[in-house]
Length: 619
Image 1 (tube, rainbow, N blue to C red):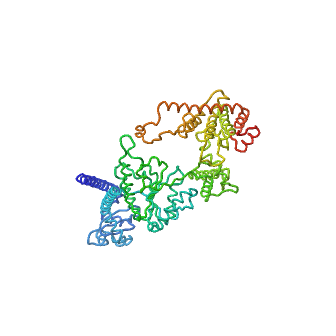
Image 2 (image 1 turned 90 degrees about the vertical axis):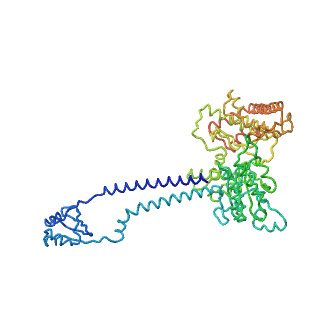
Image 3 (image 1 turned 135 degrees about the horizontal axis):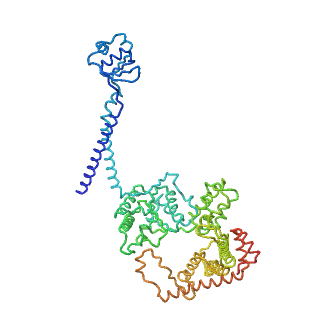
């Protein structure tokens, strides 16, 4: 307390010294300016009398005892008349004749009125007013600083009111995720009519955890629940709880729950809860005290909820595997809703929602776009429609065409075209044979996807690409599919080796992808005949300390066998790619020449070429 008093006293002392310095500076400036103001020359009464006699005075203005004299030859003078004597009498006493005096315009003005008093008092009141303003400003700043110190632990949640039509979202604005919406409909019913559940002894979940890949619409769905229930929506990112001072996060948690309880029925939404809800005690040297205290406070607040409080806590994460078990136990976040990537029907509905305010040209087929976008999330599809609108505007068109949306698929997947990246003729030939190898292997293998486009135009980090998409939605993948994918991934590498007798760095990403597939076949999916049906996989630990402390599930001998099996899968795939491309060298050369000439081959043109060359999938 003494330190606080000393700090406040020192602060006010510094402010007082600053005020005195400013006063001194203002006083000096005022004296300097007033001293430099133009001063009128003063003349005596005898001199004024001579000027009047010489008929050189045009006008005299009398203000009290002071006179302003205007001379005919130009210029002004000031003079003072005698006290208690009229001007006429004074001048006559100085020898001025009545005729000469009558020729001078004499005007009497009295010093009074508003501006007189302003001019008289302003030089005295202005510094005083400035001092008052300065101390008021300092007091206000001190009060604000004190308020900020006290409000440091208050919640920074944004609130969307139930009557905010601009920000309100309902289930109609969320396409797909039918199962998730069905589960969350119970939450809406409870918030609207909780007594129906309480009468039968049912307890509505206190916490709802939305889990899914990035961009699947977790935040949007949480807002839709609040919009359907017509209740306030408190939104806060988990990272906003954490500060450099221990205890601030816990204080903000308490304040957030307090705000939500006052506004009940309401929904609290904590985005990216894994920022504070990670597994405790899993790192080297202990955990983060601030983060762990914040998590502890959330757990306490969830336990303190009563069923009749009508406040639902919703949270979102794309890493449920790293969350603390205490956060997921019954009574806390015990309702878990999984949001999958949308299927073809969901993608079509999402595209229609994002196309509402965009002018589409006749002939635009959103179903076709949905077929070309497997694996796209809702955020990807929104970005796709936006990129299509940008492409149309860039071309000077007022409506979005099918071509714009097709091009925007590649824009979202790979990035913009890098037309400035100019390849030498030899590099262009290498890239053409590389992509032709991928495309030809895809066309020949029975379990590979369909080729939609082959291009050697650089996009993003890729110097060229072969766009292949599945015929239908897949949820389960076979061993045969992975083996064919290995062959396709290595076909570009093999094509360079066959044609040029050398290899380049262009196959680096392909080799990484092939190695990851082969490793997953052995250690995750149990698809290795030699290793057998086991799943070791990677630890996938995000905590350094936990990874170091965890025991390995297999020996060094088994690790060597795993490496040998991965290498075996890759060599078998390379051998098969060499057989395919060598046998179909004519088709490989034709595809490469076409790419060198036109740089891109679309699906229809590719299928026509394969038919003419007699290339078809083996069964």
